[in-house]
Length: 316
Length: 295
Image (cartoon, rainbow over all chains, first blue to last red):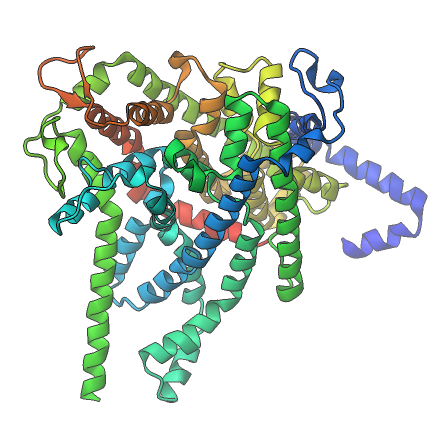
């Protein structure tokens, strides 16, 4: 196929011809794609056009096109808007904490689970571990709120057992971010470990045998064989995770936070949601969202470029 | 040698203990919700470990099942999940099959057309304005149409199709079959695993999706279960006191807390996922394996 294409490239008029014949032959395939493409155009590409209201004084009566341009006023406002700057800071803080604490957890989980010899136990543990992954944050927050409840919660029960007073964790600024991190880890640790367990399973057993021959014990094998073998995977996922540093967990926070903890919990996404859909500042909220998306895309493309250079295969 | 062996088995005990504790930690919030849903107001007003209800009562469930809005939302969720899943699977197949053909002219252009949607999105507000301008606010179609084309699923399925041997396909074409026949008669029957994976993912997505329902649907009659649970959470937030009993309206006799009713709603809404979970989880794993490898 490749050589045929190269050959016709030297004769332009014939290339058009063969392409056309091929297209006619495969026209049914284009018909198949048509509806998905039209749907994608309507629901993904048209909203991209809607982004221009970030540069306008949008009034719903005038519509997107006829609303007047406003000379980047929204973006000027952005950097003097205390609430936005707070949200930006919270986003980065929460996200970095999650990267530092939540990201390594599945790696440790996978390495330790791999040391379990009883296959049945391993399987059951793994199945249980990713159950929360299949629940929405609406459902999980209902559970989380009960666990930390000052009326019924098990945590406050233990606090009273050692003589403390119940704490209203969900509206406590000091405990809210730790709760975000803990519950995020609880939800995703098992799911995140799947990919590491798969790459551990593909390690050549010969490597372990060789290490044993050199007198390596179990821990040495974990550190010198297992860990290095999954390191390429770890690095790829780590760079990707860094690329999405502006995603601090919208679903989780929107379902867990409340006005009492906005100071530490309000992130860019939740700020866009409130200022846009609750206060109806469509244009300003779009500008905030655009800022986040542009930075986010630059980060993710950079991440992918780095991975490509390092490992010859990107994510797509 | 003897000491070394002993040390290793100590580690084994430690490891097994850790993972047992971990599993209990994962399950506890679920179990606690079950207990809460079968308890009454008295039993749910004290701090504790709550591993077993004082007495099993089904009042919360009776309330949930007799409360029209929750049942309506349940039905809406089921309809949405079935319709949305069929739509996603259909569009995924229709887009993935042509994109899997290396000899399709301008294939790269079409692939990029789909890929761009994965990286660029308008965001919450432009999406909302589009749905508003299309007149789809408060229309259940707004819950299934925007998510009907999922580029990630398309890539997974395309990758799977590309691994299929071309031989049978080509001979069928030479025998005069068209591509649609090839797709339905040859490709789809041997692609059941990937179709099952995508269908399961799509079903879980629709079952759990709440954001579109929150933003696009105001009418309670069109609401979904996730929103019912969410509304109960916010109601509690506002009163800032979860001891408010659900009084009067539809309730008879024993008093329940909003928390008991909410727990029962949570249980009926995760019920279907938990029940099929043990049987289908291998397909989810398969999905992430196919998806994580590049095509």
